[in-house]
Length: 85
Image (cartoon, rainbow, N blue to C red):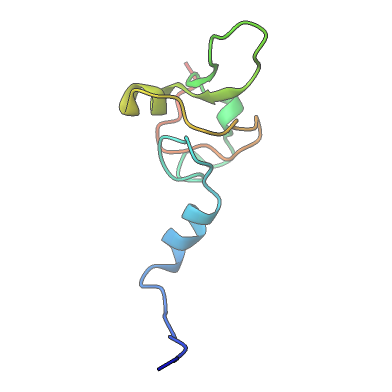
């Protein structure tokens, strides 16, 4: 039996946040202070490998004990862990 399921999201706002979040962010993209970006956050850091410029989230690293799998662009909307300094 091949039926198409018609699913609705219980929380469209959560779906929107999840869709904009890059793997390796500490929390949902856009959940931080309005108008702030990951590049302005003190947790946006280079992985500390020579000649390797892939900025990732150090807060994610602290929580998960590993770096996220993707580079996080400077202009990515920040998450709830945003800290300017």
